[in-house]
Length: 573
View 1 (cartoon, rainbow, N blue to C red):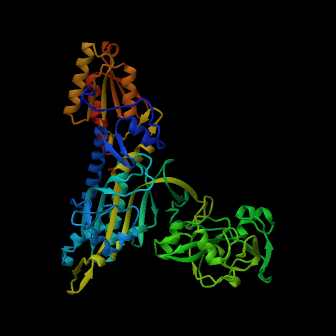
View 2 (view 1 turned 45 degrees about the vertical axis):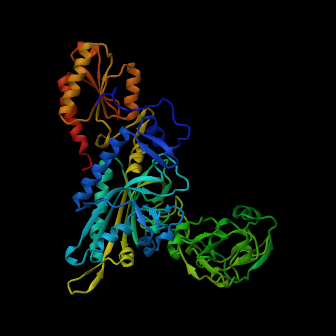
């Protein structure tokens, strides 16, 4: 491709609304353009990268037995109603009606639709199966941001496995786990597999693949010693042992005028340190009030409540609901003597004595509270957000908390969808068996952006060779120098014939502009051709990643680049 003929609309300045590095560089480099919030046009450079990512994904999924399909984006509502997700994902699911007034939706994922295809399976002899597609998805994100990192419309590879039993599902899950590791290595990323919540996907086990990045919206707990890793939605930790006073004294009321926070109460009374307080949160669970109790210095991880209580109908109670349930406002709430309201407590409170909590009367609290004696806990459930420095649940060493981007997620769905939609086969004994399913996703655009987050410098993007839009750019320093132009065309043609994706910068621009553009869009290698070098019989080969410069004669430069690029294409395979 000649740069003068290519559509590469680079910009000198950052877009005003760009926060993430990838957002800034992909727009400036002419890879993407915004249509509306959460919706992006993929320009030629972006498409070249996206296609290479898709090719890597296809190669690795095909290698574990994947069969590619293409399923529709518009779905009839009745299928989603059968699985219960028509209402479960209200808010991000885009619903519409056709001219016949039938309910429809835009696909946010394809578990239901692949399962309808699986209903044609009739015998255990047809299993296992592994099907996938690369297809458009739409989720009505309330706050799309970060360029391609959080969008409403995107392309995703989702694959689905079908097995006769849990053992077969385990095999396919492990094959995907290994294939995903190879995919991310080939994309040049160090992805950390972590235990994760399955969320609205359902199932009992899932693993996310996370890449550390400042722009990430997920946090993981990570142990450098034993490599334990889990999303903070799922992570656990060990806490130091706490020694409490005896539980002989009955709870005592004491006035706390104007005290409304954990910190204010800790400063008000020397016996009310944050770790000696009981934090009482009123939530509406499936339409009914419930009390969620944590230690005062701990934060609630809401996803743990959702997963543990088995419902997505979970939200903080409004002021009037709080007063109706407990008779007081937030800041003076407690669970002592409460009945008729479900009480869910974090295990860090188990057996605690001498605690301080609200008295359910504004401006009053209780001290000397024994959790076991004074609070009728209905359910003990891990509710707290893990913090850095707490003990690893595996080896006990201090945990780190890292900000990350999710680049892939694999789920053991079990029989949730196959039972709801009637996907079953006859086994060896002629008995009907419901199919066991797995679901495995990778977002193409998000991976593209995450590579940029992980691989850039102050000059621009630094693409790994495996997915770079072009692998080599041939830059002519003086476009009016005939020997330079001839040498450039020779090198360009030789590289193209050798199968190297090459861009010839033949524009009538100053050398500085050409160099800056090549660095901005991140092409791994640049061949610089100028009259002075040619007079000495050499051209310069510059490596984008570290700026290394080699002076070689033109034919040697071609041979060197062919060998180097072909080798780097296969890294991670």
